Length: 486
Image (cartoon, rainbow, N blue to C red):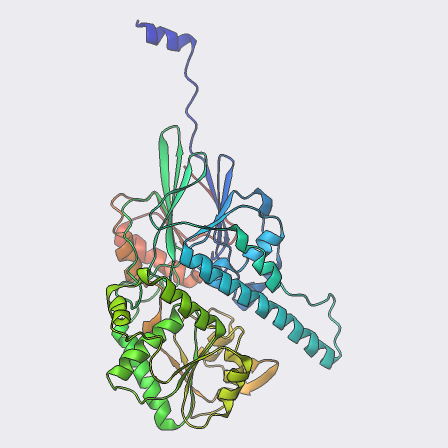
């Protein structure tokens, strides 16, 4: 018997610790919005995204307790600046979170615009409800207050910490995160979290919202070659999109049809990426002389500010977009484009005679200037409402798209007589085949795939599809589910 063997009998080595990682699904589980995923490991607690629920049936969750002590968080990792991924950060900070919010530089600047706008809308909506209650002689059981104010939104900005793509950041003992290009919106990231203990490591990928290959303006999503666990979106897990050329064709058809009918083309659009993509295609169509040279209003102070950030981070453009800018053919400055910021200018649009195009937020018609343009056009058979993005269940946009004969806007009911058109090709979310193609870059067999960011039916459909195509272990978590991964 050797000395080491003898020594081990009397002084055995302590057992190796097991990797014990808790993952809680606190939003975007069984639904699309409200992204919030809590990861806990060996005293380090990380929140991945902190988004606002936007579906009507889930909006009450925005007011509920987070389900954990915000002051206990080590950090927040923010994938991108859409409201359903960052929109509850002010509430998190208000309730005690004092740590860093890691994100790319572009995401940080865009998120600040989005959150200030959200705070403004929260204040305006609360004031509008108070006035409406007063006119109706109704006294609510508790005073109407905004979820958070502009000042409370601004209070969290000092906690944003910029990180570069492909540069690991340490979050705690044995825990690091790296951001990779997601191709969804400017600055959007797939986040890779690596957890190690006693030489054993696990890699967790979170797609956030995964973009599509061959889309204009931005580079394609970055391929990832290794992962033990993957949290992947399933927004369009039950379908496949038409390609980018179809989006351009659908836009041209909507413009020409509305021009011939003599109405207005109203486009509810997200201020980040979607509005810029529409301008990109309008610029191409005008240069190709495939549509009439109508006046196009981008009626969104936020979208106008976002364009300035796009121009600042031109290093994130794909080759085609970079070439357009070099040749002074930027889609953000074509002839006939009017960038509208003030309320006075926005109201003046309603007095213009002849066909015009109005691009305004919000993309799901849940607030903002789009509601006022809908009021002026939704009952006009000669006008067109063109939807270019996902409409979450319960939102005004979804109700219009689903063919409801009348809808309530700003406290009044209006018949839906306008031509309602949906252009699928504009989606900045990967469809099921595109997600599968992206997942197939992973060379090892992942231990488990978690499907998030999808309505239940879409996620379950995608689960079956993935299992049939790969044989992998796939789970569709429910809201507030907790799993332990090893």
